[in-house]
Image 1: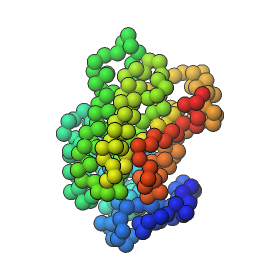
Image 2 (image 1 turned 90 degrees about the vertical axis):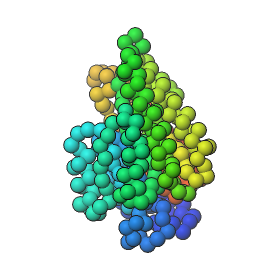
Image 3 (image 1 turned 90 degrees about the horizontal axis):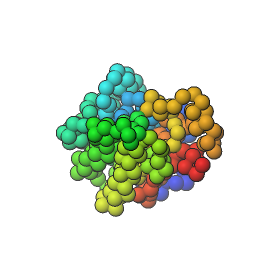
Image 4 (image 1 turned 135 degrees about the vertical axis):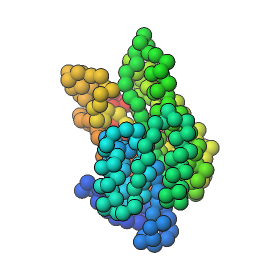
Length: 279
């Protein structure tokens, strides 16, 4: 829970409930709340599923307008309709593959054309699957670096040109960037590089733009985990909190980092892993 005592600026606040939990929204903009153009704007990649959709719903509940990037599938259109049913014109989707070198500029341009501002970029999209060294291929390596490193870096480049003072970038990392998993060499390398990019940009873009990261641990099981039931049970037993995390935990960390409550947080990597990095 974000306490009201964290408020130290004239920026407007909105006390709201996210999934039954109180959260104080501290968002950019000094104009009245009912002025649509004053609502802050976030670009969120990989927005249609899992952690991405949780972030989208929570930011929207806090008053943000959203550009929802997705690669494929029908979920994005349903999410867009859901959010716009609550607040008309507050969200729109943009389909694209991060392998497309022109996508970052297209995303930034679309956000500016629709909303006229960019206050936050959240690089959530990620490919994740095992690549043992003896079977790793160049296309697999390129794919994992594209979604986990090149895409986020060039999105930051494209968006930073339009972001004003007080804006922020949040990169979704992984605790295994610093504690590699056997059999995932390309994925772990890509996330480790994005970790470094996060810290580098925090220095390069400050004080105008803050750049931080969120490093989840074992969250929602996915096809890329490549574990059977016994292995999943053993992995879960290693977590000091004795359970998997989920999209809600990651989303709350992201919402904090893009808020005014985190106005002096820059270059930080916030682990959301139930203590797994220490196990």
